Length: 270
Image (cartoon, rainbow, N blue to C red; front, side, top):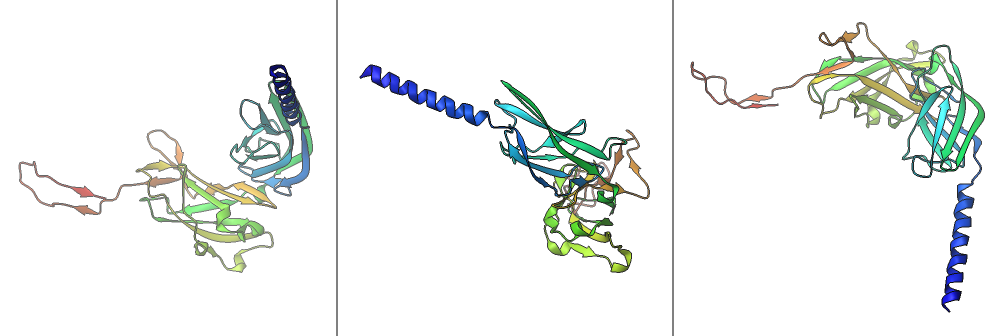
């Protein structure tokens, strides 16, 4: 009986090993469907790219899948990626590289493959939103207004497709009524001038921050916008560029008077 049990266990183990080996040996391939459909996006990068297929690895012990846009790495989103689907953000365009081939590399313990998808990603200036933001300074929790031109198809999408961040913290654009379109006389057949309001993050400490405006579109991709300004702001001490400066706000003061020798207790709230 002991021998039979050992033989049965060995057979079970071998069957398990065969199944695992078969799963791990899935052919590396890519389906024709891509997101965005036209494989176009912002020259600044940040276009959300989805590739479906099989034989991919997420980052882990089993192996790593890397997507190259030309010679640059597409930043994978591990949370959404799987063995059959890769999500990543395109890198910025390299000088002179408006078309970049999409190549997938899979590296594992006992596996190394390189697959040319046969498709190229196109960086386009008309898929690069160009926006201005005002005001350029204030306290946390106040309204900011983005104005600029965006291709019409994306401008008609839900505001959920807009991702605005200040110092990494998200600017709230959750309400549909925040989108306010300008009159048609300032629009063209390909672009739409629009205004979008967001509420700056309330948890930001006083300081200087850079901002990012990113949008996703299933057809035209888009990605990171170029935030323009009449005058670029720089930190006078470090020389670094910044988009927005937050300041503290005092809402109340416990006392406005005190003795001439000092020592009075004063409480500031804000």
